[in-house]
Image (cartoon, rainbow, N blue to C red):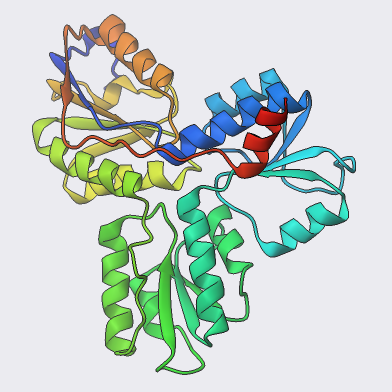
Length: 325
């Protein structure tokens, strides 16, 4: 059987989650880079991708942002922006040694987790950080108290993690995880450590959870769900996994041209589409136009769940620069 082609795929309806795309932390992070370019001039350096989206990063690079992973080849005294994922104290010390003028774009919800880790470490707790060890957000949080923190990614790891004092254990979570996945890990930790200290407020980002809930709500109404986001974006991958856990066929794409017609051939009358918290609306519209052109879509609807009205202010140091200008 030959692969499907766009010409023999016919979709009646495209349904979009109304709640999709940029969260308040991402809007703030992009705004920080754009305003810094205006008031500080070019170039402005950014440690790590400001958010995990190639389209956004390339657009900011074209405007004069320089993205770096390490500081060794960066000139002294430049403007340096920390990404929305946060950095460790070690990175801050490196920046100070190189006399960087720093603007911190760390998402306030990530900052909250950092502050919790610092406080718990001061109180002598072993901190179980539920997250992915290689993720830049987890690396930053780990750096706040490395001798106190143990990273756990699965219930199996939660079963075997070792702590100094079973009566002094707390847990925190990477902000972009699935609440369902972390719940299973937390149950294991509660069983092993009955006095487990919980965060005063859930660490998982409100926007991450809202987008996951929207996916759960839409999957019974579509035949296939496309998730628009980057493969190195944790919240993007989680959306696909949430849909699959609900029994849906779901695929992660970065751009409209990533859609494979064979995913849709024969059985798809209603196609669903959502976008991760780090995906711009322009790419959503690109997919809509692509589906109209290639798959004969004539009906486009939005699936409504909840609305968000969260906004985060700019960092003080950038607001001051804008005022002084």
